[in-house]
Image 1 (tube, helix red, strand yellow):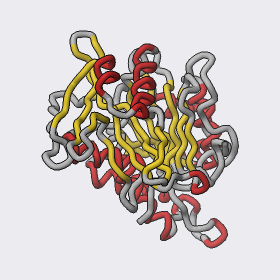
Image 2: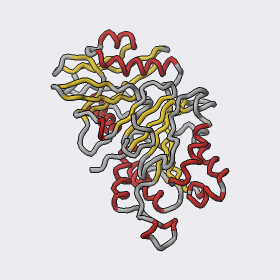
Image 3: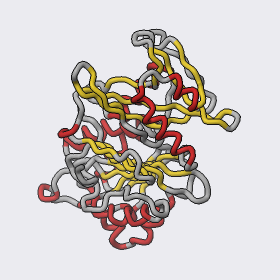
Image 4: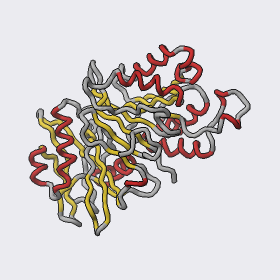
Length: 335
């Protein structure tokens, strides 16, 4: 398994309970890739999940579908759920990946937990889905056609038993690829994104939307602001600039930087923070304070922590004592 910090990894996931550790790079990507979600709700104190019946295969399974070109895994899951059951969800904790052959070719299906949005109602797509049911996990276990589909269900149940299923996302992003320092003679805080970085920023807007952050906190330096601006514009979320997230600000006032990062855990809203590689060690130090006691290693430990344009997605428990349940490292897919 490649280390969590390896630049070849375009997706990774770690959970506090050391269940379902995932790393994907070009070297171990299946020929066929799909993703979806286990959509859940609490009804009369019982956990219920949404299962669908597909007439083409005459099977009961989870909402999912194949990845389209130019999509990240998370974007595929969001699109497929919207198309198959008419729901716009926010992705939660990553669940087990199922792997099996299709026509002699390996296939991976990535799953997330996704809570039913307040007031939303699932509607079966008339083409691919002819019936859907809300059922308890025991009934789901009996109805599911393919044994492979049990793995993400068991992963979901384990989270529920640990009271770690209902979470909110915090995203930590490193700014997209900037113009080289050696080629920039003006002020460092005005150094902009390179052409590739601008493409990354546009693609990242679609990626970030899978977790729908409602707050954006960024270094005021241009390359960070440019990284989050597409999401800000596309989804109407204002950017709050913090000098302590800049390279110079973090060096001069590290305590202020730590307070900004810690403030992400003080609010119930979902957040996106964008900063620089030299600031990431300070960010990681604060994040480690919010790990479960005895938690598996879920955070990057080596410089550069993130490649330009990459982000960490933390799923954090709600309440007065927030803890990190899972950490994903994600990268936008460029067209």
